[in-house]
Length: 146
Image 1 (cartoon, rainbow, N blue to C red):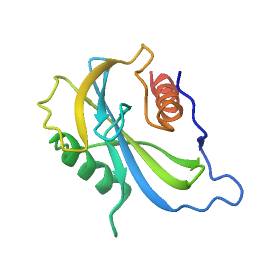
Image 2 (cartoon, rainbow, N blue to C red; image 1 turned 180 degrees about the vertical axis):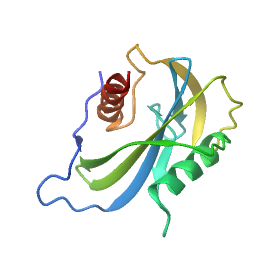
Image 3 (spheres, one colour; image 1 turned 180 degrees about the horizontal axis):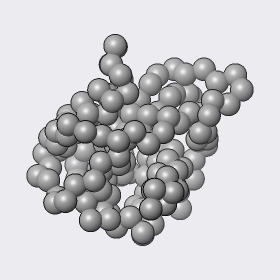
Image 4 (spheres, rainbow, N blue to C red; image 1 turned 45 degrees about the vertical axis):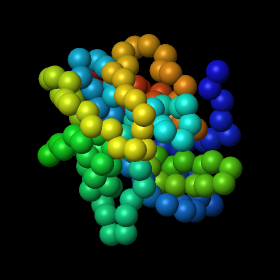
């Protein structure tokens, strides 16, 4: 069971104040989503991380994808900007999308211990806090595109 004291909003809620900015990438190959298993917890996530000083959302997404997987992509499609509130942290989270024709070679960073190509139409494995909420947001966005 995946529970969290995390709230994900499509627009900034009243009195929202961001502590950091981050970005995540939903990478699909043949209706399978790339998930990474964190090394500090038994939970899974998409390639994602926080922005460095002066980075745009897109630069953050590309850098995190490369650092965490070794994958370098020239083009990412923006999905949305989400506003996430956790008990101890609030942040702006830019989401991006890419679809490839074949599974690329994955070189994991030390932040992760494993990866999997998860069937998009199945319930995901246990995700990091806020992961299930953003995953549902992504699937809704994907359905609107179809």
